[in-house]
Every structure is written in C-alpha cells, then in structure tokens.
Image 1 (spheres, rainbow, N blue to C red):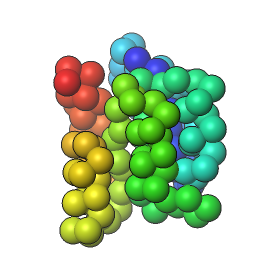
Image 2: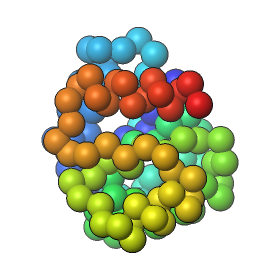
Image 3: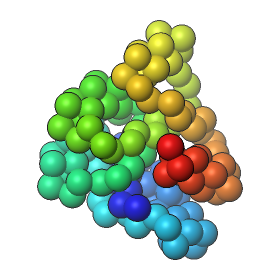
Image 4: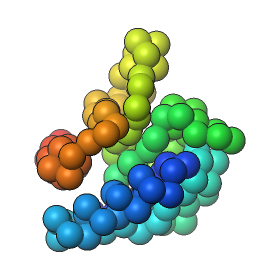
Length: 121
C-alpha cells in the first residue's frame, strides 16, 4: 500500500517513515508533504492508497485538504493524525467519510494497527 505522509513537523514525518520501514512490509512511503496544499499536488501525481494527514498545518490544514483530496482521489483512504480535534472537527471528518483519527503521541503499534484496519475496509 502506497502511503503519503502529510505533517508540518519533519520529526513526525520521519517518525512515521521509520515506523513503517521497520515494522511493516505492507506499507511504502511514496511521498511527504508539509501542508495540505502540497498534499493535494502529490495526491494527483502519486495516487497513494492512504494519506496520513495532520489536521493543524500552515498554508492549508488537514480537514480542508481532505475535502479536496476526496474530490480527486475517491478511492484513497485518509488517516487524520492530530494532537487535538474538537467536536466540530470530528463531525466534519465524519461527514467526509473519514473514520480513522490517530491521536499524537501515538505508539508504533497503534499506527500499524490503524493502517491495517484501513486496508481491510
């Protein structure tokens, strides 16, 4: 499964890459973006199966990016990764069909388990 990692923190991007490279043969990082706008462009060119998307980022946040990504990559699955999501944000994500939110900080096993659940859906 091709994974696009979108987070404004290079530390989080590196962490996710490291976890997937060490713990799973099923997932391959095909690209990284620093904000939602970059993510949209990469989705167009990379066609990832899963987009791991931070909610709070400069330029364009994760929920706004998810809305655009859903229009251009209907089959891609989105995993929201966040330190905090309020009730309104959770409702918006749910309305877009996003069913998986991973809370920071997360363990390697919770990341892998969540991604594996997404593949099975």
